[in-house]
Image 1 (cartoon, helix red, strand yellow):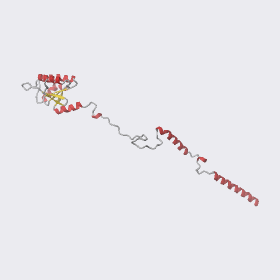
Image 2: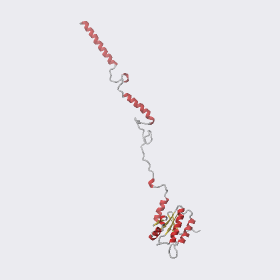
Image 3: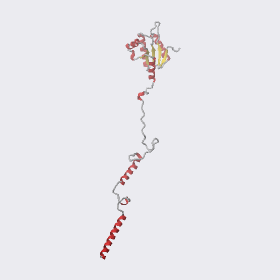
Length: 215
């Protein structure tokens, strides 16, 4: 079978040129034949469109053909479209209720834009992209990104036991009730001072006795 020459690819669509009868009107029967030939050539066809550019009107048999292939493309999980910027044809499609199921494009550029959106992956919506959480300075000791920190009294983990013991010792040193050898450098009276005082008292007593006898 020779390849068809009456269509061109526009985005995801195969755009079929509108066949005309001898009086220049849309030939619905020839259109059906052309579509059947294209579907036989492309078994996986999903996006089909007809180019009505330059036509001022179409008859009801054209609408019937459009409905037929719109249903067939819908069964294939695809779409049937019409390319026209003629207000009369657009109004006719609307009155027939075909604009609800048949996509109408005014320009080929609109078909290309629709095609780009259709070919985009479903999971690539720009508004749903996850932002990575902002970087937070690590609090781990000995990491490569940050030098080790000095331990403090609020340290946790494996250093908690050491911190608790250290705090306990510090509290004991703050105890004011310390005596004798526990605080050898405190300013309390030493044993040497006590001895000197006792000796002075003894000397004073001896002196008093001697003075009594000589008197």
